[in-house]
Image 1: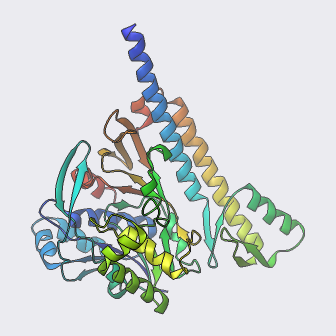
Image 2: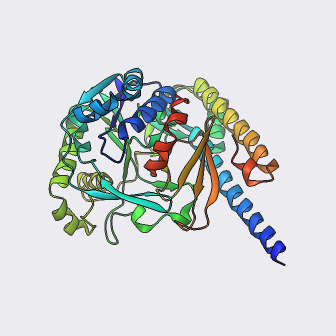
Length: 286
Length: 116
């Protein structure tokens, strides 16, 4: 079977997602040993060509797949420790991955998910068409995990984390991704039905609801990818020393920062600004 | 008194960082102890190793069905090879756990706890 990894990246004026994707793709390729493809758009590629990013991307990615740039329909607050800025957030074309992927079995990861182990290789042959991570695993621990990190709303279904998704391209998964697309297109309706906040589109919620519907409106926690080990956007990636990532992490989300580190763990870094600041050091690990 | 309080607060930071580093290390080792084979996923632990060793002792070594973490039946053609693989992964991972844990225990400052 033809296995591969797919990463989406659409730059905006504030954030160089393509550069992050090169790091994420390079690390995934190094530690998992499978080809990686980048899904991006013309304007992002044009920007990549103004720096070393394009050359690095060609070294890392098996293919660079050009798609239409998704519409910038929403703004999001991006924290960088105590600082924050509001910027466009283009994540609405993930449901198209089924049509876009060049692979039979695909691992889709976010461009801020850094792979430092071969753990996900255990899941390529799992006898299940689609696997999504069902749990958020905070670097500090359970004390910082809120109810809405586990459920889509106060009365809603279990949340899934679309940071890592693995699927086989077949008729069953086509139905799944078409349903995710349908939920995205009718987000307000599903927000009313599942009682979540519709102001910010989240793939995690669409994937969770699609999974719930296709399981006969039942929660399903079997057949999942490992929990997504994460640092939140109020944590700060301070330095990268060899393969150790050093963070300042706040148990109270903004006060009393602690120094912590991670080495050898696959990790989701939500503070994209601090990830961007350390991209060059991370590039050396590829 | 001020100095004593500062020392206590510094030490509490050290203890918090130590606890998080230990948790992060344990999660890394837990991830290493996952084994995917023949469409199933196994958690490598003492129970699995003992059960497999018991089956081998009872000369059930070929065409053995084991239940994976989702309780799905997974056919293992050669149980001896399976045992060798899980035992090897277990020994390697627990040795890594031991070595990194010793490093953590010997670290007496926050700086050394988070060092490479």
